[in-house]
Image (tube, rainbow, N blue to C red; front, top):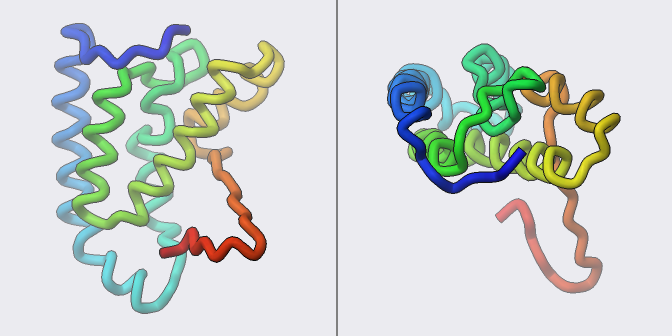
Length: 141
């Protein structure tokens, strides 16, 4: 289960097709709605559900766990396209990626079997928490 930074020829066709789908999703569903979600301070349930349908939460999850098993460059390009539409949406995928990466790299077989298939579909999503009491950090900014 190597973590690769290479955009292999094997992934080229899938990458281009997926990027085209992501750009269409960004242009038709994210950009027209991002301002409303921000103004209303509402979690974009519809966008997250659509990301699940598109398989975006499984980009780097290995195929044996139900993911696409694509390389890190493809992942980065997808995040870039999403961020172009709305940074918050790319953040959902980035925090999820951190969890997936840690589990697939350092998790036990039991953890991988239990979590990665559900993470690949977006049923379970990765997150992280940061706290610096009295240090003045503002993670939301």
